[in-house]
Amino acid sequence: MGEFVKGLTASVPIVLAYIPVGLAFGSSAVASGLSPGEAILCSVLVFAGSAQFALLLYTGAMAIAIPLLLNVRHVIYAQILPEIVEIRRKPLTAFGLTDEVFALSFNASSERFVWGLEVGAYVSWIAGTALGAVAANAVGSPEAFSFAAVAMFFLLLLPRLERRKAVAVGTIASIPFHLAGYTSLGIIAAALAVVVLRD
Amino acid sequence: MIEIFTVGLGTYLLRYIPMNVRMNVDKEKLEDVTAAVISALFVTSFVKLPLGGMLLDGASLILAATAYKATRNMGIAILIATLLNAVLRLLLNI
Image: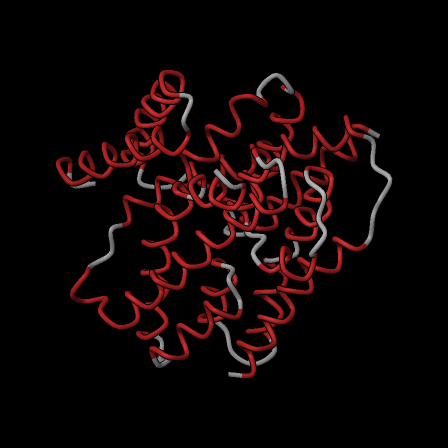
């Protein structure tokens, strides 16, 4: 089996998580005044869940600043990914680097594997958005399937529990931000806190 | 429309530019950062209200871990646990 197909197969947990969330985004986007075409275009161009939801909530400069602030955590992912596998086509690989793709990239042995993950994630995100934008009322919102992302992060965390201090720091640093409604900042805080405490 | 294009471009640059800036980070520190980020991703996706939903997710995670131990296949383990979680949510009306 080729590395790309292996990555595509490994993207199943992401697909399970992205379709319902994409569906929720598509229906929310249309409810907030975007046309179905604009909602789909947003998923095609941005491909970042929390940033896209934030785009719907704000107007003007804030509609640009807040989503980008939410995505600053991707800087950390983009720094770590080339340490896991050799990245030769950065412009291509960078586009699909979401939270879930980054998390599953630790199983990657090549860039093609990462591409498989990214294609599975991207197609399911756009398909979910399109379904939500066009037929949300008919389909409903199967939120329970968002549990797939929780289970995926949990299984990826298990082998890292031996790094107790880092796991504890990550948890303690992120929770206050999450409870205050700034989850993305919590992810950044987790990474910075562990660096500061090590140094 | 301009917001969508700008956020799309900005998000892409946030993912692309750091790939071209190689920092000389020691491996141990990188492993710790990775563990902290994964734990933060897990905790922030797991912790949510109502509490009943969290308890159900917790029980489903035990099943996911058991299925993963038995199959060594993350996709299958997550699929089994997610389906069970969805059925239980439906039955318990959570």
